[in-house]
Image: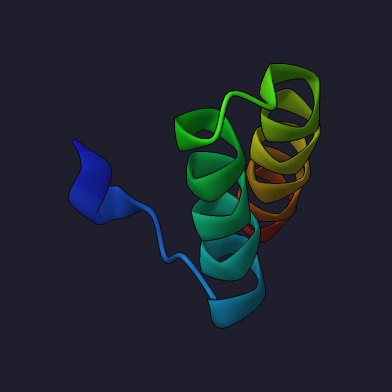
Length: 45
């Protein structure tokens, strides 16, 4: 299922930034980074 996605370095960086923000309690910022990551993955599909 997830192996069908090719996640580039930029998408992974946004995801990691989102995770870091989430772990530090900055949830609005985390959502922003997660969405940016998904936009890149969707464009690559």
